[in-house]
Image (cartoon, rainbow, N blue to C red):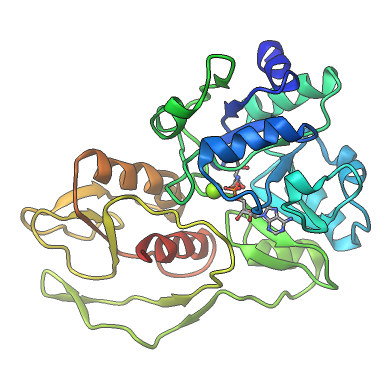
Length: 325
Ligand code: TXA
Ligand code: MG
């Protein structure tokens, strides 16, 4: 931890595990270090980065005008899979916020992330700017091997990748806009709308509306299956796409990859990539399964979207984005 923190303070990159996905970190106050993130990722520089901090105690260093409901969210869900977008303080410079007057802040729950953040704070670091540790537009890494595959060739010998094993949640954090009178979900995740409502006592409006329209008559092995369509805001940059084409809610053909809840039969010649038994497990293994499709050179992966609320909302959000090319 001390070595990695020192590397960060010296302006190098450190990829580290969080409970959501692996992040590619740099000193959030060092413009040159942050620029290295953008070049390693191949990401446009006007896209804002999340600043990771060790505790909610330093929230006021990074943010101004923190609303009451944001404090309540921070108390309830930090450390955890939640990012708050708040009016920035002077500490949050344009090179981190993409020139916006807000900053995204998160206290991650992974012990390695927290250990790194604490070691970094001890030597004077204010926060670690970190996007997901993948090339721009591709699938977020949920283990250290995936970070190496994504970014190995773009890092130097001064940079580090910390291996903390597979991520627990497997999908990126819930991003909540805290600049208005009420919280608004910008990206769904493991902290769900229901949890936010309960914590803040505010019934939030959701952009993530489900409709039953446009549903094709889908059958698997002759049995009809019921699927809910989802409409998402496409406002965030990420595509979350593997190389393989992702098709949603249809019958897989022989030679195609297939991801669906356990209990759904694959059919002959179909390459089953995952059969989770719960939605939490679905979230946890989804990106590994999409990566496996690429490693096996599959052209197409068919995914049956999980239904209902909770983390299933976030799973569908990423799947819809992955299927748009
Ligand atoms: O779980 C996560 O959030 C992971 C781990 C490493 O913390 N990080 C992550 O970062 O997913 P990234 O950069 O891949 O996605 C963050 C998203 C981007 O789409 C970015 O545009 C948005 O958050 N974002 C960051 N700061 C923002 C701000 N001030 N206002 C609006 N959107 C913001
Ligand atoms: Mg990302």
